[in-house]
Image (cartoon, rainbow, N blue to C red; front, side, top):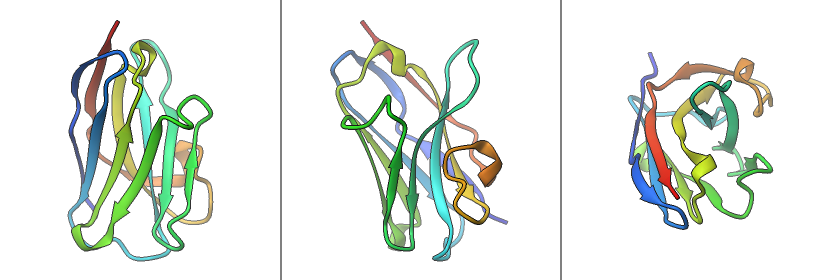
Length: 124
């Protein structure tokens, strides 16, 4: 069974940076993809970014383009989310998830395994 563990969250001032990590319990095979989602208080969980091991393609929500970068290290079974120029509206619990199949990067239906999340708080 695949287990995903997020880390790297914390409290940061607006304009600051954080790097989140998503570590997998066993080797992630090529053909799958990893996504980051976030959920702010009182809001639905939303897509942030996705990374494919097959071709190292990346996908981003419009709200984070140019500020966040997703990348992966296959040898470490880890996917990263580098977050720069953080804004108070980026405050949320961030989750990583493994894509189940196909190319449904942008919705929760495209993912089968989820981590428990890490809190990111951006102060103004």
